[in-house]
Image 1 (cartoon, rainbow, N blue to C red):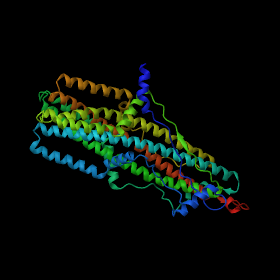
Image 2 (image 1 turned 90 degrees about the vertical axis):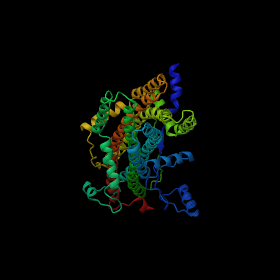
Image 3 (image 1 turned 120 degrees about the horizontal axis):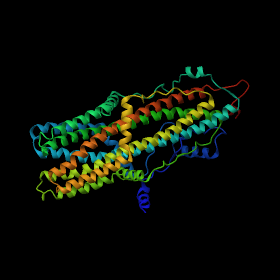
Image 4 (image 1 turned 120 degrees about the vertical axis):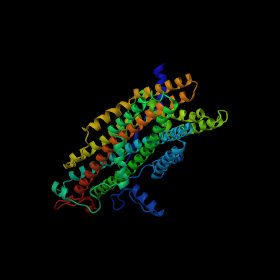
Length: 508
């Protein structure tokens, strides 16, 4: 019975299959074009839009207006403007601390602001991750789609014995004026952000963070475990969390933009190879649709994904607005005291703590599924390389053996485990019970604010670590895929007619 209930609640969180097909490069001239494709071409010309093949990468536009609006909000949250506004806000708060730093309200305000901002960014980061997963799996499907067609046409061309393959030396020495030899370079701001991310996500930085926490704990007895002593760490971790949240949204948005630019370069080369092959072979069969099957999920993992989907649709933000209205309404009753100020921070902080555990789990799991989909695309490239007898370039090596990588990876796996998420939920329940036993006094609310603030700051640093590890893999793979396609382009471009033979296009 329990299993049936779990499956009922978990079923909406199951990840579905994702499919895509690379845009087909059509040849609209000569008898090689089918009547259907000719009619498409004629219709487009008559409508005043000349037919033009899609050559670069184009992200899929979502059908729902609300989805498109939410995606624009997510994109804006990772912008430079929002990042600098948040930094300016932190500086203003820090300077106001000079005259007002000794008041409890000053510390409570930053706690509330941090909790609300973190609550918002939890939802935005969740949607950002879900969008990134869907996009990258679609990319893998699209790459495989085009490779299938390239394999088919190359086998036809090479089997015809009408073309002479270039030597490997000719391929290596080939240079095209159409394509650069490297992927787009990042500007100095992006490079500075990447270096900052490496520092913030470094295992040593995380250890330093916990050293600071233990130093604060060491002063507890000296400060008589007072509310003021608790407010000190609450203010510090609150400011740190705002910084990390905005920085993480910013670097993820930068990463997505960079991936799109790289994929555009890869798709440009890939589509040119396809077009050349279609001209040589006369093949007009569209690129096939590739289906990436849904990953297998356990019941509890599906529940986590279901929760992530709810958070990613920003339903939680709508609920927060309702809570804010109720909170404002009870302000006069509580005479706007410190207890009242902390209520909204307590609510947002506890929910945000659960979101932090879920965010790390979702990041780890989705990255695994992305890697599996990409590995399939890389295997297709290897198969094509074997078919034509042209070795792929060597992949840039990521230093997986470094102490930082191994420790960070192990720590990330532990933090992303389903059991860790369950422990996080139990921790929140325990904090609520403890605060209720203390009748939600100032001390009771601080107990509900401080552990979530400390733990969620730690989890945000782990998210940066996870981002750094996955980005290192992606950058190496993007460069490898691009260099391989340049080599494939050189091979196809230098296919020459054997003496006394002619190509299909020449025969027509």
